Image (cartoon, rainbow over all chains, first blue to last red; front, side, top):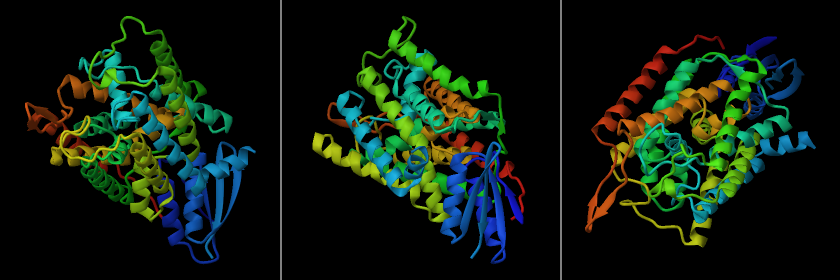
Length: 71
Length: 368
């Protein structure tokens, strides 16, 4: 699975990196995005949904893991 | 319950409600004694606090505004209740300090931060349109840098004490505001002498800090997200702020349309535009508007805390070196257009240069 580590990055860098990775992701494949704050979690979630992705969120130690799939 | 509230605050309804409440509270604070079109102004209030502490000697803008500690402590409370308080630091703090300094110099050339630009618009001051256009241009330049890989680097988790330094400092300021020790300066005339009762100002600050932490309210972010991704989430909250403040101003008879000699405003259009362009660019490069930086500082972000200290010391530089814009004046029926003097104009251009150099220099390669 392709992965974007956006932990510790300021707004809007996690969103920018997620958008770029999703644009390059083949259909049907999954992308994992790691973020640290609840704000980044919400921003990345909104971005992925606006690009039509299904998103699953897991709490991981000190942050969140968002797994998204391009339809 | 906590999860349901989190979902609500993250929703469109949540951000509109928060924006509306901020607009209402700001307009009411004006009625209760804060200066006209300055119910909430993060830049002006930071400048007033710098004055109260004696960091500058501009006698008309000295007052320890309780709204600002309220912002930080309200945000801190929200972060603690919703388990989002995280001490973190290490992302180019010295760069953030100077971005704070220049953001304040730009905002004071215009005479207001983005929050006050919106409130000036809601109060009928048409110079706000020029300022907001400048803000938009500054943010657009910031977005262009961000798209090309501009980054201040990663923060790192820190010891809890690091995250508490700014909230505790704000608590200390609040105690000073209540105790009024003799060394604390307070204006007897001018905008610094106009203020709502301390307790009401504090409650307003706490409420706004709480709501803004939960909804991630950010005036700069609202424009940036539209430019960057056509994402209108945050800007619906900002629009709600303007609409509600406008309606309350109309009801209270505080709406006065004009372009010259507006309350604590000037009509030197070039400097309204360039001042806010500098502020917008600095906020975009620092990742948040001045309000947002205070809210982040409240939830443990010590880098945002450094930006905040930059804002307050920037206000001191602005007044000690005579960089801030002067309001328009009508003397014996003749309009004297205000704005920043030549040294303030140089400082704005220097700030823009500083931000442009950073935008090119602080680039990081990352693969999609």
